[in-house]
Image 1 (cartoon, rainbow, N blue to C red):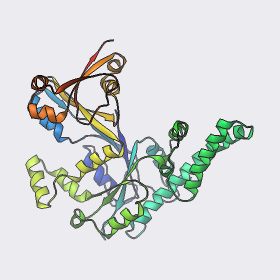
Image 2: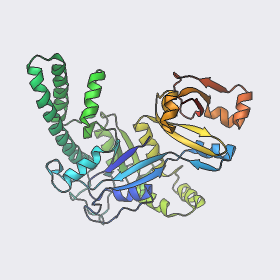
Image 3: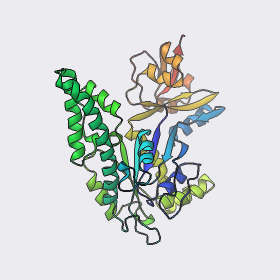
Image 4: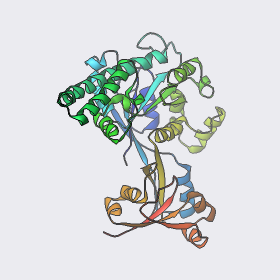
Length: 366
């Protein structure tokens, strides 16, 4: 399944630097607003140590990791919801993403101009929040206007729908994002999805810090964590400049030495991608054979036929059964045949809920 995350933020907060670290595509990075005019798109592989371990055990002809699509979206200014700056284009690009990575500048540097003249990540967050909320308010009010006519005629279903939209409007008008409104039933869930609201998308706040603040954070990071405490959002601390230096190193050994010097266990971009997975409630299962070892992305809670359908729709339509080995069992016994002999291979039907890390083989008939 394709996963698309949009990187957003005010101009000059480090969006394009981060994008360059994540992707082989190179966004223009310069010390002035709107240097990224069109959204840059890059496809990046998801780091997974389990895939590397399976490769060692199976020795396949090729290894295929799962991927994430990253979109670097042009910087936003106040008034975007009314079309200021690149407003309409910016908001349209966000609407196409599955999740938002909101980059906040949490470092001081006199050489990098801040669009508002000073460093205040909470203020920056509120600028973008407000613009997204205003655009969502416009969307919901238009939908309510249509439904309200039916509600006034006594249509009970329309009345419930109208009440739900009013709940969202009340939240938006109070300065909250739509994600704070939790649908109470399947109907409300469907109405929320159909609205495609910008502020209902899962969000990760990424605090871009200087080298000295990567491990412990700083006062700016503390302020962000306090400001988003009630949102149920993820907060990640990362130094985009450090990640840029890591990306320039040519070998794995050089990168490891650099990380050791900074007393870091892994690059921040690895944590970012893994956090994005967590944010979207996703997990990975594997297929492992001599031709190919491959990682596949599925939602948490997916059943075996759904997992098979990620490979090919025919696999789901004609699903018969799944042969499943838990990842830890595969590593312990070192091969499928050894797992089978040890009784660690189970045969599962249509109701089997796939677990993160399962090594699977599907039987199907079309």
